[in-house]
Length: 243
Image 1 (cartoon, rainbow, N blue to C red):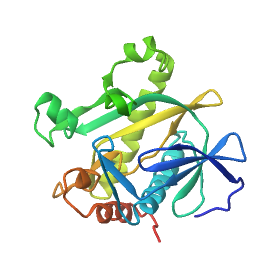
Image 2 (image 1 turned 180 degrees about the vertical axis):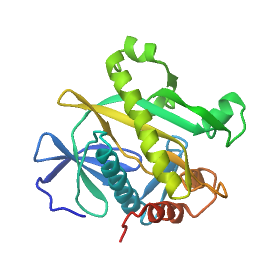
Image 3 (image 1 turned 135 degrees about the vertical axis):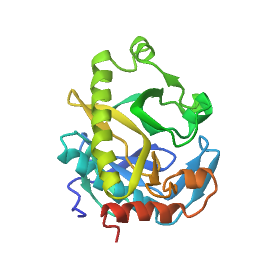
Image 4 (image 1 turned 120 degrees about the horizontal axis):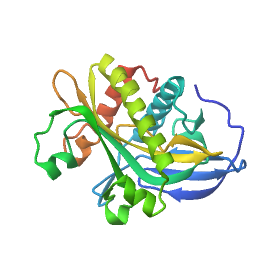
C-alpha cells in the first residue's frame, strides 16, 4: 500500500544505472527512484522499457516486506509511489554477496560447467562493487585487508544472505519458479548490518520450474525480448499488486 511521505525529497545524492537516490529532509532517510532504464554489460547497452521502474519498485517492496517478516533487517521503510520508496540511509559496504543454486552466467563461463546444473550446497561468492573494474571476484581476506568490511560484518552478511536464499527459494518454488542465483548488498545503520539496494529480476535469475524459461534480466542481455512482461509474470505469480 502506498503511504503518505513523512519526509520531503531534496537533492539528488547518486544516479545509478537504473535508480536515482535522493536526500530527504530527514538525515537518516533516502528516497530511491526506480527508473525505466535497463542496462547490460556494465552500462554499454542501455534502453528505456516502459513500466519497468514501477514493476521493480513494487516487486522490491514486496520482497523486502517478506524478508522483514522472516526476521531479516532491510532498509525499506515505505512505498511512496509507483516508482519511489523511502529507505533508511545506510553506510554501504562495497562488497556484493552472491548465492548460486544453479549454474548460470559468469560461473558457466569461468568454470566451463553446464548451465542449469544444480549446486548442492549453493555456492557463496564475494565481489567488489566497482563498475570500472567490472565487479571483480574477491575473497574475505581481500575485503578485510583493504578495509572494505570486517570479518564480523562478512560473517553476518553471509549468514543473512543464506537465510534470504532459504526464504526466497521456498517462495519462488511455491510459485513454480527456480531461484537460480542472486546478488545482495548490505550497509550499516546505527551499528547494525542491514540489507540494502534492491531485490528484483534485475539482480537475480529466475526460471520457470517446468520449462526453464528465463524470467529475468537475461532476457535483455540475450536479446530474448519480453523483458517487462517476464518481470510482470514473476510478480503476478508471487501475488505482487502492480496496478
